[in-house]
Image (cartoon, rainbow, N blue to C red):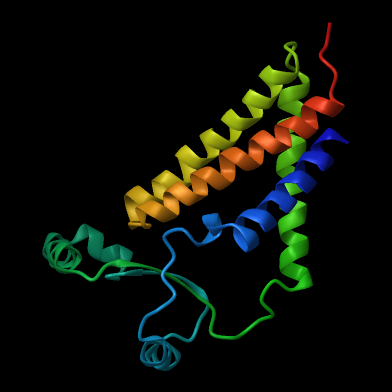
Amino acid sequence: IAGIAAGVVMFIWSFISHMMLPVGEMGVTMKWNESASIAAMKNDIREPGLYMFPGGDKEDMNDPAKMAAWTEKYKAGPRGILVYHPTGDDPMGPKMLGTELLTNILAGIAAAFVIAWMIPGFATRVIAAGLIGLAGWLSIDLSLWNWYGFPGMYAVGQGIDQVVGWLLSGVAMALILKPRE
């Protein structure tokens, strides 16, 4: 029950942070020459996927000359990653929202197991939940910032989103789970 409550709190917090506060938009750029880029992508990319550029074949990594050429392309830029779906979909449709709620609840249940094993009281459990969010942010979002060049402000926004969300979820769990004797 505590995990479900935590997941629902996280889901609600995510709505607030992305729809009512600027946290969800931090570091995200929406203005660019979209129509020309989309026309080129529709012409060149047929399959959905996560694309990295500059690209190359894995076999090329074993060929020193090809690896050196790739390195020069990487240094010269542009470089980045693209999550691409050639077809449209309903933004924030029932499937997306349901999946988000389910994953928030599953994360809440996992955190509730950890929090339930803790002997200390309310404040310590809330702080522990916040530290779970901090650990996730450090290991996931800062890794994406480091390796793939995610914007710094995007990483900061994700840190705020995760730590605050888990602190709020921690309050829900700490209210439901009583300390063990």
